[in-house]
Amino acid sequence: MSWRLLTLAGAFATALVTTALPSAAAEKSAVSLEGIELAKPTAEQAEALNLLPESLQPYYVGYWLLAEIGKNPYAGWTPPEGPWKFCYNDSYQGNSWRQAALDKYKALVADYKEKGLASEDLVVTNSNNDINVQLSQLNNLVREGCNVILSIPSSPTGLCSGIKDAHDKGVLVVTVESPVTCPEAINVGFNEYFVAAKTAKWVADAIGGKGNVFLINGIPGLAPTLARHQAALDVLGNFPDINVVGEVEGQWTPSTVKTNTLKFLATHPQQIDGVVDSGLGAVSAWQAFEQSGRPLPKINGFVGECSYLAYVKEKDIPVYSTSQGGAAAVWTGFDVATRMLNGEKPVVSTLLMPLPEITPENVDDWYTPDMTVQSSCFADPPDGRRVSPEFLDQYFTKG
Image (tube, rainbow, N blue to C red; front, side, top):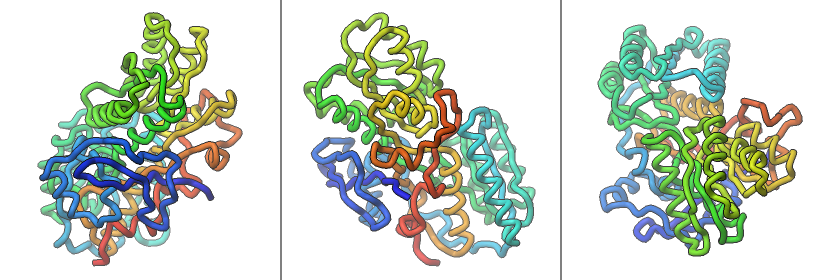
């Protein structure tokens, strides 16, 4: 098994960063951010980093653009005796990422049930992006006796009253990939800013540090969109010979990316050397270039979708993507929850993990021949986990 974890170390006071190996579990990154000036924390934001072990602080650069760090709200919590009731408070299930997350959580709970550690099958709710419905469903799950609730909130604040009620009743609430500002929650995910800085740096390196680039952005106004966008601008600002010639609204929707890229290319006849994609847009953008009769630029992946791997294999073009599939995301949240059920205590309220990298050296560990450009799946890590159990140990103390 060969996969790499994004690594970063640096002096946060100056925000000049270098790569390092914070643990034996994390391999050296394929992309270096050495000498790149990134987001600078305020004194208060820098102070919050001191709650973390020094080995983990590098993964939190720019965290303030999407999350807050606080003390573990469950520090005084006594876990209930098993078997446990596991529940899922989802905000949406209308795409393949969410379905992969749901399927993995169901499978993990089914395995626990078979071992006598779960009292029943996973209990699932879906609010279809209505935060008021999601809050009502969360409150109902607490009343129904759930011991653990994993949640993907559709708002950073809209569930706070329900999360506080759950916390006060001894119910563990862990958000996955969508951090909230509620002080009683445990948040588990990845650092959008940090990962986006890596992908932007790869594009800059791939075009030799010079040329014309445009950005593909996500859904306007969302914290992940803003963090990824700012990271791209921050990194590219370190390259005086790179010209950012425009931006395309992609909304993390391939059809939207293609439509808007075609419009962009029609009004920008100059050579485009690179595109920094914030997620799910690379293949559609390349197809727009092909349809327009334009040379293919260097474009990063972000989520690790199967279609991206199929395309780069078919065209024999440079590959770089992180892996951010739903199955591995939920497994990380489940790992955190079950560690806490067994008496381990996270050192902070928000646990940001590095993402594995897909590179020319390891792409064959991720790609399978059944992947096509039309595939809607995601390439999960070969062992299914974002980080090893040994790496995750750094986020916990032993009861």
